[in-house]
Amino acid sequence: MKTQISRNSRQATKNYSSVCHQQGRMLTDSDLTEQALLTRDRLSQALQDVIGSGTPRFNALLQLTPSGDTEVPSLHWGRVYADGVPAEVIVAKAVEGEPTVDPELFEYDHQLRYPEAPALPTASAYRLYLDVWERAVTWLEDDKLRDPGLHGADTTTRTQTMAQVKWCDTDTQPLCQQVNPQIGDAQLQMILRSLSSDIDKCDPCSEELDLNNPVGNYLFRVELHDVHYNDPLPPAKRDKDNPVLADQVTLKWSSENGAEAYKTTDIPPDFISSQYVYEFFNDTNEKHLGNHLARDDSNNERIIDGQRDDLLATYPTSPPAEKNYVRRWDGYCKLIKAGNNWQLDSGFEGSLELKLGTDNPGTVIQGGDSVTIELRVITLLIDLSDNALLCGDYWTAPVRETIHQQGDILLQGEEVNTGALPEGELHHYMLLVDVAADGSTM
Image (cartoon, rainbow, N blue to C red; front, side):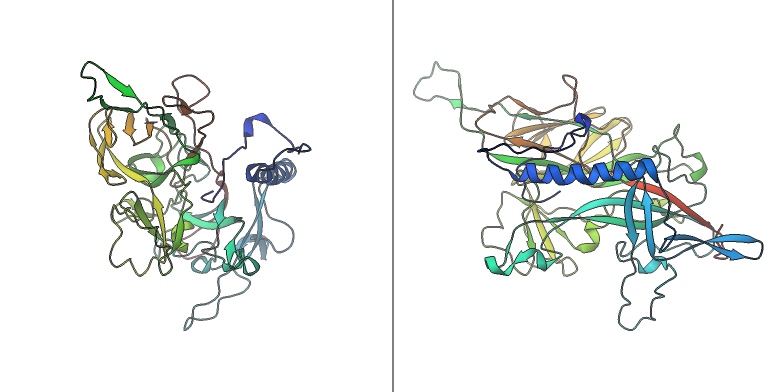
C-alpha cells in the first residue's frame, strides 16, 4: 500500500492468527494494520475452503438462464467469489449524453472498477475472465477520508476489493500461472551502501575516512512501474512450457513509501525539488495495475501493458491536463532486455542521471539476468531472469538508525545472497464464459 505506514509487519508464512497487545507497550500503525489483514485473510481462507470460486444463488455475476432444454450462461451485475475472496462487479453511472445502462445485465464497457477497459473484439470470439485484487485508496480519490474536525487532515486509508471482468482470446488460458501470474517472482536485495569521504586533506598519508552518519528512519519502497511483454507466440502456444516473458521493465523507488502524492492543483511548496522524479496519474491508472491479456491483433501487442506514462526527472511547467494527481519518487530506472542481457535504457536517482559504472551513486552494473543500481544510500540488486513480472509488484524495507549501519542488508531472501520475492496482494482469477463472434455465450 502506498500510504504513510511505518512498515509492513505481516509475515504470511508464520501463520499468525492474531495480534496481542501488551500492557504499557506502544501501539503502532503496523500492529493495527496487521490485525486487520489477518482477520481479512483468515476469512478469505475459510471461504476458499468452503466455497472456492463461484457465484451465490442470488445477485450473482454469472447466472444460468433457461433456453429451451438447456441453460445458457449469462453475466449480470452482481457478486462472485474468487479463491474465497468476496467481490462484486458494479455498474458505473451512465455518462451524460449516453444511453442508460442496463441495471441488471452486465455490460463490459460500463464497469465501475475497470474504467477505459480494452475494447472487445468485434468480429472474433473471445473469452471473459474475472480478476479480483486489493488496492489502496487514499484521500485523493475519496475526500471523505479527510476529517473536517481536524482541519481536513487525512488520518487513515482504505483498501478496496477490485473485481474486473477482462477478456482474452479463446486460445489463452487465464488460469495458467505461467501465462497470467497472480504475483511476480523477481527477486530483490537491498543493502545500505558503505559511504566514505574524500581523503583527509589535513593528513596526506590517510586513506578514505569511513562516515558513520545515522542512516535515518523511513520505509523504503521499490515498485515495478511498468512492464512490457515479449509475446511473439500465437495464443495456443502460450503455456507453462512457453511462459510470457517481459522485455522491458521500469523500476521506481522511494524513501517515503511512494506515499507523497497530491492533486496537481494543490501541491505544497516543498513538494517540488530536483532531488525527486515525478509520476502523473489519475484514477484509471491506479485501477490498471496487474496483468491484462487483451491483445491488438494488428500489431500483436497487449493493449494496456507497457503503456504507463514515463516518470519525469523535472517537474513540468504545465502538468498534463488528463492526469490530476502527482506522486514523487526518489528515482527510477528503465531496463530493456537485449538477447539474454538486461541493460540500462534510462533513469535518474533524483538529480543524478543513471550511467554505467561501479560503486558510485547513480551508476548501474548490467549484464545477464541481474542488474545492480547504486543509489545515494542504498544498493539495489534485482534478479529478473525469466521471472514473471507484474505492474504494481513491490518490495519494502524499514530503515532504522538505532539498529542499522552502513553495509547492512535491509532485504534479502530466506537464503544468503538471494533476493526477496515481491510483497503485495495476489490477483485471483476466475474463468467466466466464452463469447462467440455473434455475441452468444458458451
